[in-house]
Length: 346
Ligand code: FAD
Image (cartoon, rainbow, N blue to C red; front, side, top):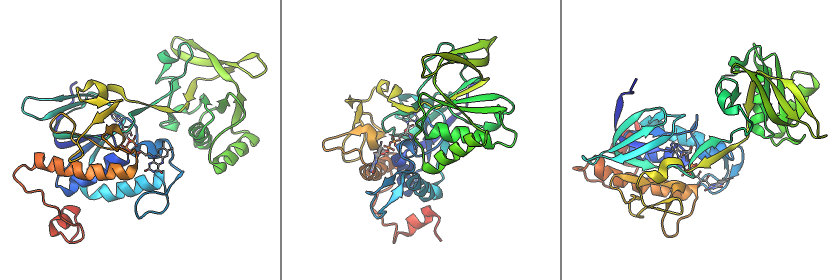
């Protein structure tokens, strides 16, 4: 079934910190938008790469973590309620004859918008896949790259693969499920895990009390019958192999950003980044803007602060297209009754 076409003033590709702030700045220009991200959550690199690490160079916020910054950006954009479309990658972008922009995502969702802002950072984050024969055929049924809804593993033997925080957290979450798996095993190639100390302590406690099993080794084979996984072959550090029962495998092998289809959208690029002018951060294609880490111009610095500035000027550029008969005057949020109206402040 074909999804209905969503007609929109603005669509933003990427819900990282810059995409979120872009939605806020568009809101101040009286432009509502749809935000699309390949990840199942907003926040881009701040959440994927350094959620609990400190940031010291956001103006007027001496210290916050990646997660805290994203939470604040979400609160700030609330008055403009951007519609979120997560878990889908923007695959096609095309300028139509009437100057609108057609945008299609990997789930088949189709948008037609007056302006498109590309805030795609370093690309869409994708899970590193398990390089074991047969894994692809079992993906989604027995091999997973995210924990998702933990209750779906009830009564089964689950093996979580990985040595980083996402693996440790997923394994622990499974052990805490009320109607959880029959067994939970955390497997990594060596007995060294990288995670928050509190999580690591919880992991060692779970191993000590028997709710979590630890397996040191690497998967070398999958045993499946008629599409049903039942065991893994594992190479262990002493050079031997063993077989371990498992009906479900969750591989938390990290995420890597992939520029993906952006290079096929017919926009001028330089070293995998979109070339923009610094007046409105428009690309060479009218009505398409690019802000944040994805763009390039003389003096470009890949910093959140710079992305915020770019998003502000791009919003003025977008306003000239979406509201062509209105004057885009500079107004202060402190004093403008029009901006207070837009922000929902009495
Ligand atoms: P991103 O954060 O990369 O977000 C882009 C989003 O677009 C992603 O969520 C991605 O999934 C999505 N996306 C991409 N392509 C598509 C597509 N085709 N369809 C759908 N979605 C798509 N900067 C600072 O200013 N201060 C710091 O202290 C700082 N510390 C950092 C520490 C680390 C470890 C790293 C890696 C970076 C740090 N940075 C810091 C840089 C900062 O994180 C980036 O400048 C910022 O994240 C850029 O924001 P963005 O919104 O442009 O892109």
